[in-house]
Image (cartoon, rainbow, N blue to C red; front, side, top):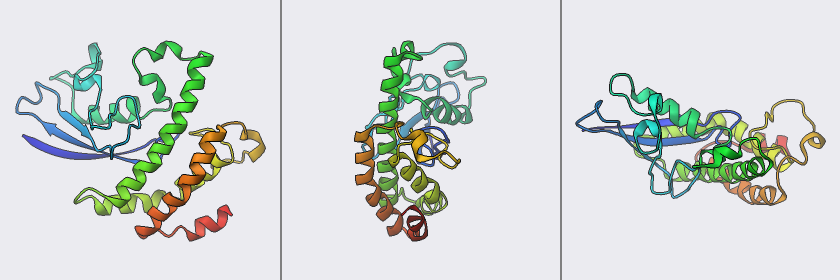
Length: 221
């Protein structure tokens, strides 16, 4: 039985952008006739409908979720790379709310889109909490990876937080020339309040791991 650990970086435009998500992969004796078993290092957070606090991962290609055809594991063609790509593209996506069973029928409808925006706000907050968890308790042998990842992504993360606190919707391309007035109604008041409370803790977690945020914070003031 082989054990692997994989790190996935959250994609731009999603509530998981710039985050680091670690998965333990076990290859059973019957692999590849059976799919790998995957465990998510959650830190006790439920950041996505497919990723449980317990670490359980629900995904068709792992045969832990319903699916058919190319969605499920195929011993002749499926690989670990397919699993990782599915996790990044299908699970950690732009609108994870619709990953929940039956919610895909609400795509494009006012109720569904409103709920999706609210879910994205909570998912981003939990993604920030996940960052702090990893920085304070990096997995053994992954300490340097975690430190270097957030050292390189600190600027983007703090810029995004600042844009969100000013009203930008989650996943918004905060690096462009939009003004505060153009997106001031993009995020909820409750979310902005929660993020303002979380922001200094996130900065502290970066700083405690040797990431210099002072220059970035000066620009944001």
